[in-house]
Structure formats: structure tokens, C-alpha cells
Amino acid sequence: MKLRNIAIIAHVDHGKTTLVDTLLKQSGAFRENQKVEERAMDSGDLERERGITILAKCTSVDWGDTRINIVDTPGHADFGGEVERILSMVDGVLLLVDAAEGPMPQTKFVTAKALKLGLKPVVVINKVDRPDGRPYEVQDECFDLFSALDANEEQLDFPTVFASAKNGWAASEPDGPQENMDVIFEQILSHVPEPESHPDQPFSMLATTLESDPYLGRILTGRIENGVLSVGDNIHALNQDGEEVEVSRITKLLAFRDLRRVPVDSVASGDLVAIAGLSKATVADTLCAPEITEPLKADPVDPPTLAMTFSINSSPMAGQEGSKVTSRMIRDRLMAEAEGNVALRVSEADNTDSFEVAGRGELQLGVLIEQMRREGFELSISRPRVLFRDNPDTGAREEPYEEIQIDVDEEFSGIVVEAISVRKGKMTEMHPSGGGKVRLIFIAPARGLIGYHGEFLTETRGTGVMSRMFNSYGPHAGAIPGRRNGVLISNAAGKTVAYALANLEGRGALMVTSGIPVYEGMIIGEHAKAGDLEVNPMKAKQLTNVRASGTDDAVRLTPPTRMSLEEAVAYIDDDELVEVTPENVRLRKRHLDPHERKRIARGAEKRG
Image (cartoon, rainbow, N blue to C red):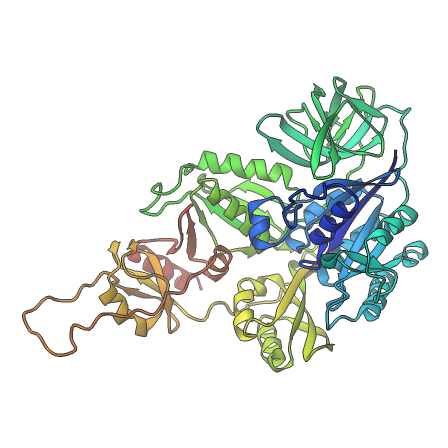
């Protein structure tokens, strides 16, 4: 059977996973009466809840006498490490672009990687039935993007398909015919080259993704570069330095068929395969026949730019809600995650109970924290901080800068420009994007953007769309103003009382309601002014025998401010932590004792 290997890349919410659903259905992968969930490739709980793709996944469809292996990739820049590695498995890319929004920052990031590897692109302009769609303009923008990314002439001569994945049709023109997706299959077969096949050479393969199975153990996925691999074959694994990691025997081979992984006896070069039977080999290792001593080259992955400290939960409520609370359990879980996630780095901090976790962005680390709390972990999380570096030529200190693309109503453009200017961002482009909206593009230090997204949504009344991606390292931007308001801190332990909270509402917005257990040093609200304020949320009303009209009216509290995990992590200051348990997300001071906080503050003033 002939083969094609292709990856689908696109920005968040441009319809990538919906397109894969439609291709699977129209290729005959499902029975007519088979019940298939919407966005079938987003199989994880978090992926379904958030409507985003987090992990790259493989599937395949049969079209005529050709099997097309499709890799569905994440659309968010924070998960770019997944995309960078899997591009070595494919020979072409299906670049999916929204007919209204056009190429977005993440599209640019992944497309640059794909073009650099010499992959052939097929452009699919999706959602052409949108009332604000501008398909031909977007096609021109794609050409301009390819040209700016130094695409060669063959890559610039890309075919364009206009589609509505949700309605199940694709065509060579935006207005039809609106029948099926055949034209996409035809363009893949005619434009994407068949993988090179060397079945007579010794077996070799680069491990691209890693996962763990409770029955099969470690499973490594990749594309077979040379030879044929069969169940029972003896192979060895080489790291990038050419050192032998382990020698093993293949216990199971799994090939991708539709949404299933099917056991097979052998797989030939050019095909994608998942291998079980190894215990030490990991991502970027070369799996090969015993006679091979040189590893295959793995493409480097961009380094992480953001770090957080994960530590044990040291609050007075530790151990009450989670089952995994020790530093050893946290360390083992983080190390296992870092082994399969090439964009993540884990190192032990000075304190033996804490770990430095570095990644691409707040969303990537937030997803990891959410996964851990669902598994029963209790953690304390620090404020995110950017990773500085020294310039290799001048030795000057540099920090990561991000490109920010914002689509916002014209009336809010001024307040957005002002907010990012305060954060040391510089506007590089501004133009109308249709429908009364303006597209703004900035280059700003990543340090200034931590925690800005929530403020951005408030300022634009929820109508703005912001996309960010790493741009480059640049000169240190100097001091950037942080959170303007202080916090309300509980001065004792107990359960909150409605009477006390009602009297505190004038001091700021509360984050707790009545009857909630709190402890000394826990943050219960945001102070209306600068500076922290210690308060007593357990103060009850004095009982007297005096009665007067109106004094005993029922207390009506304003609903408290509820923060998501990502909002809480972005909100805290350097001297604060987020306490994460399977049941709750709490904010607290790093040092719970008020005298300890004052002593540290005095020491900081003297040093300053």
C-alpha cells in the first residue's frame, strides 16, 4: 500500500480537530450508524473541557490504494514542543487558516519550523462560510507569510483549498461545489511526496513521542527511517551522543488505523509505529538494529522561557484533601512528565522539598498543575518568572520577548496600547481587520505579560482576542510595575463568619464566602488600596439584650471573586503562593507568620 505522512498545523480554534473528524468520516473510517464523539482526536478530559489540543496524536485514513497517516498537533504556542518534534515524522503539512482571522502567531511559529525542514505545504482556508470571511485576502497573506519565512520556490507554489470543515465540504473555490472533502485528499496525494523507503537496510527509527501504558509499559512512537521491524526483533537504543541506553526485544508493535492502535506483526520503513518493550529509551533516542552505532539526528527544540517553583503543601490544611503530598511523589511525577515532554525542564531547587519547573508559558504549566491535582497531588506553586540569559557575545543580561497579536474593537484600542506600553511593549503594526475591529501587533518582554490576560479581558469587556508567542531574547527592559493593589490576609484560623465578611466588603473584593475554613496568613480578598491588610474574618456579632428596629436584618454578602488556577497563578506576587489541592485553589502568603513577614520586609528595605 502507498503511504503519505502529513501533519495538520493551525492556530487555536481554527478548526483543525474538526477537520480531522470530517476526513475520518468521509474516508469510511466509521460505519454509517457508528456513534463518534465530536472532536474525536481530543481524547483527554482537559482537552475536551477546554476545547484545545494538548498532545500530538496520530491517526490514519485509507483513500483508494493509499494510506494517509495524519498527525493532529496542538495549536497553542505553549505546546509548541509537541509540534517541533513530530515534524520529523512527516513529509508534508496541511496548514489550516481561518478565513476571517488569517495567519496567526502560532501559525507563523510552526510554519517556519516546517518550511525550514523542507516540508511541502497544502493550505486549507477553513470557515469560508463565515459572514466576515475574506478567503482570497487570507490566501495572499499566506503567500506573504511564506515569502517572509524564506520558503523556496517549490513551497511558494502551494495549492489552496477552501473549506468548511464543520459542514463537511472543501473545494477549489470559496463558493463551491459544497459536496465533500475529496479535493483535500487529492491535493495530499498529488502534492505531498511519498516517504523514502529503504526496506533492505538495517532497521533505524527516531523516537518522537513517549507515553506510558498500564499494561504495555513504555510506548515510543516514531517513523521508521530504514528497514523493517517485526515483533521479537532485538534492537538497541542510542542517545544523541551515540551511547547505548539499553538493549531490548520488541514485545508489541502498534500501527495507527483510524482512531485505533492495532497490533501488527511487522512494519516497513516510511510508516508510523508505536513500539512496546523498552524500559529506558526516551524521546530523541535512536532505536536501531544492533549493528548500527551512529544515532539519527534529532532536531533541537527551542528552550523554555518561563519557570515556576513546585513544592510540597506546607499550609495548616495540608494532607486533608489529597493523597499524594510528599516531595518524593511530586519529584517522581515531574520527572516522568519531563521525560515525555521535550519542552519541559525539571531541576531540584535549593530547598529539598521544592522543584524548579521550566516550560514555554503559563498555559503549559497550568495544564500540568491541573493534571496533577486531578491525580490527587497537593502542591504549593510560586509566581511564574521569566528565564534570563547572558548574551553569548557581549555578556549582557537578556530576557525573552514575545510577539503579541491582538484583535479588538476600535473603541478599546487606546486602553490596550496604553496597558502594553506600561509593560514596556512596543507596537510594530496597526491596521483595521474588518467588522469594526483593529489588529494590533506588539513586541513586549514576557515578564510584563504575566497576569495581563485577565486584565485584558476586563478592559475589552471580553470581546478582545490575544495571541502570544516567543519572539527572541533582547536587552533587559528594566523595572516593570506589578500588581497595584494589596491583599486582605486572615490574622487567625477558623471558619469565616458572614457578619465579619459583611464589614470587610468595604475594604476590598473578597475571595471567600461565609463558613469557609481559613488559616493565619491565607489571602481572603484583594485590598482596595496598595499595601496588605490583616483582617479577622471570624469576628462574630456581640450578643446583647438590646433590640432595635433594623439591627438584626439578614446579612447579604456580595458573591466572592472566584479565580481559576491560571488566574490565581498569574495574580500572586513574589511573596505569595498558590495552594493547590484536588478540592480547592487557595492563595496564601509564603510566610504565614506576620512577624516573619515584617522581619523579611525590614531586611529587604535595608538591602534596598
